[in-house]
Length: 118
Image 1 (cartoon, rainbow, N blue to C red):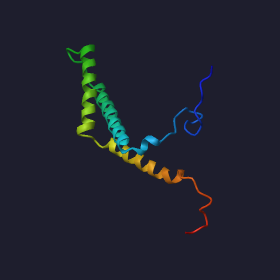
Image 2: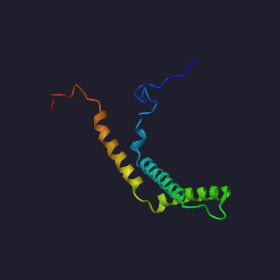
Image 3: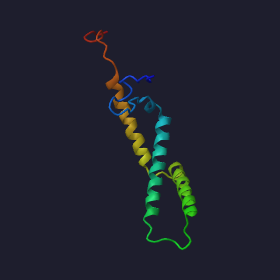
Image 4: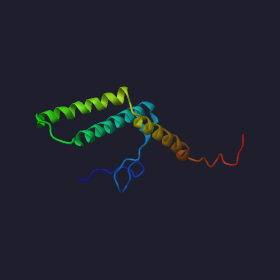
């Protein structure tokens, strides 16, 4: 049996990416997304800095590396929550402006109201 396909208005036909932007209407969702984005970005930055080490330590091991990765992940989450660098807020502001710009463009035109004045 085949699965039903979502209407093309909510899913891009070629890529399968949802075009539903209703989540952007909530300020809390935008802020949470910005904080999560900042956490991921900071974590990637920490991981990149750790990878740039010049030599192996005398007592380095895989288990120590695993715990260091977990510690870096928690550090990134705490940094995003308490001392953000600003990239999450920039993304939140950008998405908020994009959502506000789409609202007038999506409003359907009422042909009965054109040309009549109250």
